[in-house]
Length: 106
Image (cartoon, rainbow, N blue to C red):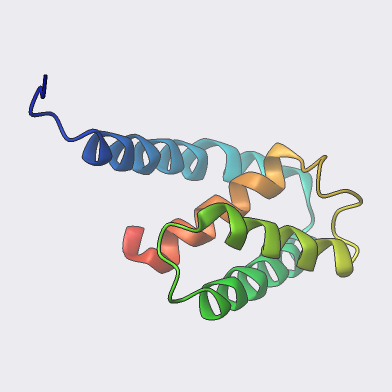
């Protein structure tokens, strides 16, 4: 029996809110633990990976996990992370923040 609720909009709103919280609280925490140069390099590499994933998978809306896997493998190649399976909350938050930003969130 249809309820008339569109859960897609609710999920999108929740993801937006979660990303905003990550951006507001986790990113400043990260910035406190890295030097300015380290932070700029990390954000730059993640930004390159995210943009590349968006370009390579531009026709595949909804393939967020595939895009994220691409970014993680890119970071693994660059020596930023040591395992795709063990990504820190810091790296995950930066990826989500940059995706949110390039998708018009900021």
